[in-house]
Image (cartoon, rainbow, N blue to C red; front, side, top):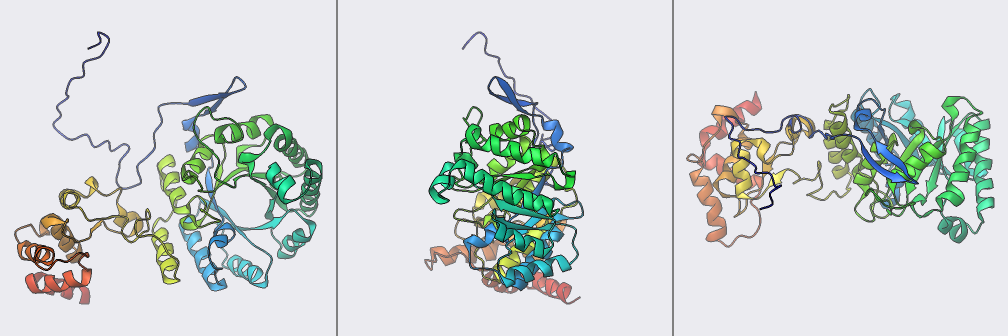
Length: 466
């Protein structure tokens, strides 16, 4: 043993240390930091100060009706209005979900926008999305929108290979539409497509400088916003990564070198390398106030940051619900199921089995204390109590948890293992004697509760009627 190695003594305690300052169970676990975090670019520190997260107006924006529709058959008008209404409920009065964006090209697009605005919700604000061409901008004016996103591709892959332009021509064409928007009193939100493959010094910074110069000549409410679009999911959050892939350095460069304030920066990612959620959260940390998301991650190809994941991350960073109605997440998932949108059973927060265990040892933990195997109070926050699926791996503990949850029994009223014995034996016989391979359905278990525990069954029926 090294002479410098510290000997760690076991600390016996009278009560368990459940780290409740982090794991309160009534909310998603809070994220605490030890202090400021730094990396460097050109010898200058790229920092984020965790203390500012409590006071900064970080928020979520939504692209469910734009990017989200590029990954599935189009929603009907009624479906989009219903989803928008639920997004407003989720957002709450403080605008945690601040904006959402709409296509403007078809009659259905425009009718959807009109009907959503007619609901009168303050949040999310309805904005548009267009290509940076004058013909598209006419649609924004006709719709009477206060803000629109516009596609301003910034990598040479897009400028040279897709658009068949050079850099000067691309910048001039973009600025022409930006000028038209400012002249019309409409706030432009420039979407720097493919920024994680762009020449930052050679194109992005000169273009953003032009945008900031124009912003200085107009009222604050018209100042140009910048959306950083990680179109192919190449963005990386790790310290020390080079531009253009480094998310911290991208935000620092635009913030410090070009003077784009945090409240006019927005991150838009894709999930091609399974980094989409952590990348969006990293953008918040390093000074990008808005994280663009899509409901359940549906978006072009591999999808966008999942809106519901961003909601939980927001609560974890803020340490408070901030007016968010998390039960709307379940309502949105139920609605998506009803219109045939597939959500994997194990999908976090909303999959049919996201908080359902099949392991007997986990069921035993749930029986003793829900906090052992449930991420937070899912019944309170999502209207989804922790559950067990009954298989040959569930054991008697699994049967106990299932029955008590089905009967709604809590505390001293809960049924113990002894009373469940017949049901537990019947479950094991299905697999040992009859060779069953599938999980036992709720309907089968309900019938057996009626058979083996008739007095509890009758009590439940009486409570349902009353």
